[in-house]
Image (cartoon, rainbow, N blue to C red; front, top):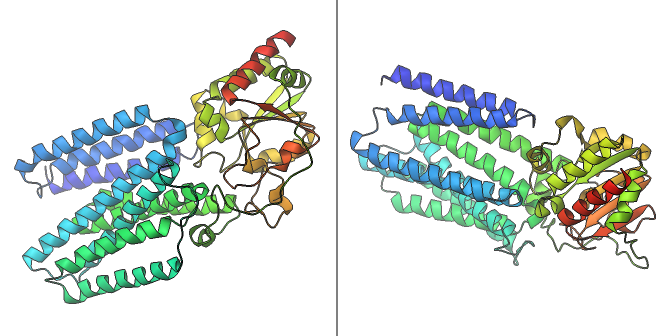
Amino acid sequence: MSRELIDIGYLVAAVCFILSLKLMNSPVSARRGNWVAMFGMAVALVVTMFSPSIQPANLAWIGAAVGVGAIGGFVSAKRVQMTAMPQMVALLNGLGGGAVALVALFEFLEADALGHHAASVQGITTVLSAIIGSISFSGSLIAFGKLQELLPGRPLTFKGQQVFNLLLLVVTLAMALAILAFGQATIPIFVGLVVASLVLGVSGVLPIGGADMPVVISLLNSFTGCAAGLAGFVLTNNALLIGGGLVGASGLILTLQMCTAMNRSLGNVLFGAVGSEVSAGGKAISGKQPKSYSPEDAAILLTNANTVVIVPGYGMAVAQAQHQTKELAGKLMGMGIDVKYAVHPVAGRMPGHMNVLLAEADVPYEQLFELEQINPLFPETDVVLVIGANDVVNPAARYDKTSPIFGMPILDVDKARTVIVSKRSMNPGFAGVDNELFLNDNTVMVFGNAKTSIAKISTALDTYA
């Protein structure tokens, strides 16, 4: 295949990547966006196979590797639960960063064997992709471990950790400059650079709490994109260059948007050692007991309402209760009750978590309302049904300056006439603080597994239909 046809194939792939991002802006078209991105990647892989730089003897090995990766990815994606999707994203992102670091290492070895000087554009991009790819690889593995509860979710710190990280960063940059300055005969330094970058990724993510892991994963995803774009320079691969740039930019934008949604700065997330499941702060709630209602009692409240807003949370995701929730909403609408869904931007463990779950249950997108749209409607809402949400509905975020969630925009569910909370227990959420909403005079609790509780409420509605 001629170089011109290969470049055309890369151009098609790049257009597909850009179009897929546009389609993923809406849950309605997100699935099509995935298919477009998959098609673009398939085109890029196929035309790469015909690159003159690939030896025909290596095609069998490359094909085998692609087959193993495709089968492994397909099986893993089919088996993973939606609640574990952030962990899978972290793991796949880490593998991408590791792949880029390996490409940089082997390209450096080849350049060294040919006697090429490292102080060139290609040499600089090789060194940078090795550093960023290694940090992304090890950092993503730590994020995976925290979300999968293989590691403690709390910030893991030790005395002088920030100084250690700073010194490690200085050493890493010094080795990078040494490689670029001396050029040849620097393989031990390059290996040391990769090792130091791996350690930096680990030591940089360990002090961050589990509740902030989605932000960290998004940032590391941006790192991997940048590393892949740099690898595109190294390999003179236009598709890799454009695709990496898109991932890097979109990942950074998503990171900043998540920080804004939590009213936190990126620096606070990375260096504040807050946001863990055991973080301190917030005022203790005592002297009051929650009002516990049965599913049948909750059904009576719902049937007497004219407007109902459903607030899905991580508890709904864990219980896989989205289908029961859709059935409940359908029965309410059949009774002439207006039903809406309020989706907080950081509900669950990754952006869009609730949107994906509700889309899986075929909930019409028109019924989903974002925070800015739904908050003005709560004072006129008869009943709010909170399913497994906690921190995103905690009123303390408005006024309690000692709370780790202070200043975070929340759903103003407490302003509704009645609030029904379906939850396993009174345990706090990721922020580690009690939720005063659960003890408000207009709040009733339905304790139990969300899937079971919502199913019972739905069944009880048949009595009053």
